[in-house]
Amino acid sequence: MSTATPSAAGGLYSDVIRERWRRPRHRGELPGANAVAEDVNPLCGDRVRLMLTIEPDGRIAVVRFVGDSCAICTASTDVLAELITGRPRAEARAVEVADLLAVLQAEIRPTRMRCVSLPLSVLAQALNGTKTP
Ligand SMILES: [Zn+2]
Image 1: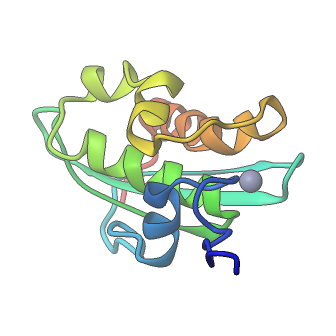
Image 2: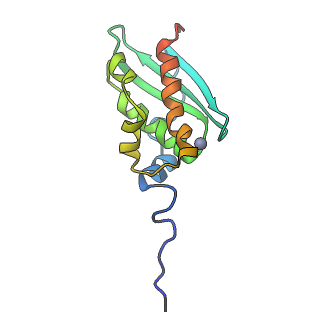
Image 3: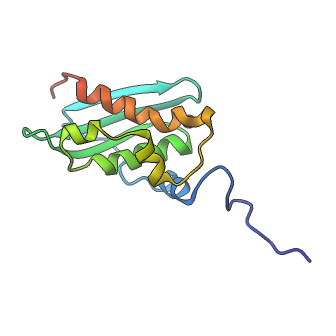
């Protein structure tokens, strides 16, 4: 008699990724966002649009995202949104892939690293952008 072991345990996705993918906390539209950017990861087909509300003092008040992305990319974007909410612009800029991986707790294959880093490049574009509402 073999013991039934859920094959989902271990494997490609960590619990954090699965949970964030199923129930992202920061997904949704953000009317009135004053910093917006969107980019794609052609390797995987991920598309992420980040919307930020930045206070006059440079603090990031609200972060939302929408897009069509894989589990890793969705989870990574959701984690990034959480990390930068309430932070000054300069601190948000300083977030690195390693910070996201530390939260995701997953061993990401080199071929999927772009899924993790895509939201960082979208964020950089949003912070550099000069869009006004
Ligand atoms: Zn992906």
